[in-house]
Length: 359
Image (tube, rainbow, N blue to C red; front, side):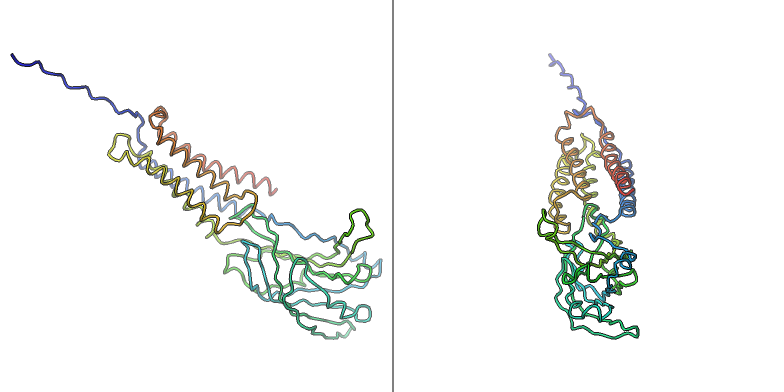
């Protein structure tokens, strides 16, 4: 008697019911996100203004000079070249000249020669080169080498422009004896820093006085001295830093999105977890590289916000791959589109917030 035949076991459907996203759809989302990302980054660089502080000089008008009959010392600054120009740390140094024009019968040359730069170190000062003008005023020029550290705000890094502030003071002259005055055409920079990605956008001058308080409760214990300030606004027109910073993060994010185009029952399904974990590990490692060419500050910059965005999105992709069975009710396309929309939405929110901040 023939043995009864055993019916074949029914073919069970795959555990995961999620359908893989077509590779064309993934590529389209990646290209669209990349285009919007860099277009928005360019827009951020265009609308952001300089966040650095302005000169803290109490101004005084020329009418006040006329009313008080106080002698004036015309002041000018000439910067021939920057021997050190590091905007990342705010460390700067230049070679140039400082000149004065004054009445020698009212103010002595030895007193004028005691000028200095506020919050800067004059590493070299030449003897005065003088010339007597036809109107009786004395022109004195000093060749100087100055090193200083500028206080900069890196809130918008890497889309940041910066302002360089220089203040000439003379603490040996009281504001009751003389004032330093300067005009916009009394400052000159002939060196070109565009080779380093910085273009001189604007120059301004302001003159007045500064005050040193030696006792907060006794205003008589203070020193009021003349000051002449110079502002130089530099625009960051180099896209290299933003490209080097954000392109690797975009690539790692797209790598984490590749598993959504791999079917759960394909021969390559085992690579899904490996790709997401590799992108997450790559982002964490890339953070150490970011710290090498980013300013070391105690507040969040735009680059920090975008890094946190990408690492959260990669973590979402990683969790989705680990708990794929639990999340089988959520389609891969929904997660893929959602993560890309988060990148685009965050950038648009940054543009709106910064536009409101600027206005």
